[in-house]
Length: 74
Length: 231
Image (cartoon, rainbow over all chains, first blue to last red; front, side, top):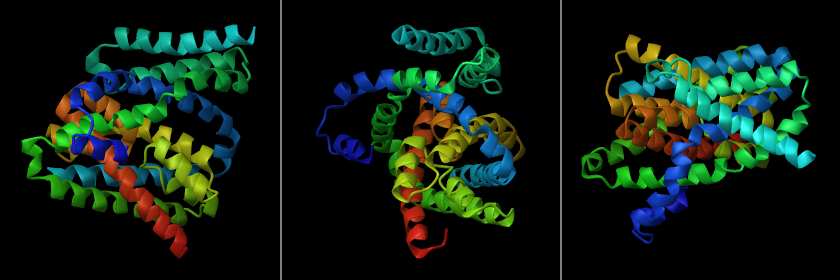
């Protein structure tokens, strides 16, 4: 992505050409994440053991992150 | 036979998503996102009919194979907005803020997981939770970390972030499209970005900036922390 970003910034590939093919991926972005979420089912028993620490720390950290980044960007 | 099964799961995943996107009114998509609704419905179907997960995994590869290119495709709006005159003043600011964001996301996650007595493996799974999975999975694999566990957590955090965001934005008065998009992209990566694009294109572009820069900075910080033995 970084490489593609730099290529576009320096104008090595015309924007219109890149735009056309990227629209399809952007419009359906959510769809491509669905299988990963459904397959989370596989780790159900593992999540039961240490899941609380995993989920709580990740959620709390995300809340802090979201508020901090939203406030900084204002 | 196998081909028909695969075709069935691919069709039903895309079909359900299209259906939910049509029937759920835009007013409430912030609370029940079509992607989440599709996921829960599919989990329900798999459990009720006792479908082996390998069967769905094999079939769903036809869909998840697009995840990599989709993230690369995000470079297009990223570059377009990066070059826009109204963003030119805040370019350096965005670079700097995203470095702080990624430090906050990484350090609070690791600190809280340690505080709750998590094993090193779980700490390693929590650390990259704010990076988009196509970047996080190869990163964890390089350090022999629990990449599958992290992939699940990352998806969950995306869902959680998208659901909690409206409340957080309301409580902490984060109102501008730019700030909301940036916060969603940084904390809820791919799914947050997808939701931001539904709100407005500017918001989506900021989310993309957040997601992309978080991915780059956090990979860097994570690698440094691993080498120094801090994780």
